[in-house]
Image (tube, rainbow, N blue to C red; front, side, top):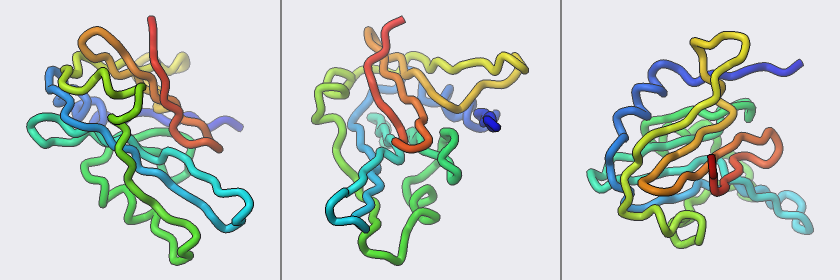
Length: 155
């Protein structure tokens, strides 16, 4: 059974508050599992966009790994993910040094694209999000095994 997750009204309001703000830097929160030393698993668990006004837009995987949500602080998100096993850890990695994100630095977030739920047009599915910057876009998609998948987006 496929359970649909939706963006909340709070999420939608949060997204709108970041429109027309310039990106200062971008980080990813990586979840790393080294229980099997022969096969380390790393997934992107959250994307943190910091704007020039120092406010952060954080898009993260939900606790069930089936959808995305926005949260107000990295600490709020990772508190529930900490493991007592040192072979499982979370760490922050600078994403804006990568080719995917370098070109959006100092550009404004102009809009965000979401998918409407075909069964209820008043709701938006939280399986992905499109971030539209001045002349380019990026897509974040939730994958139940691979975490957040990031890519260029062209309409």
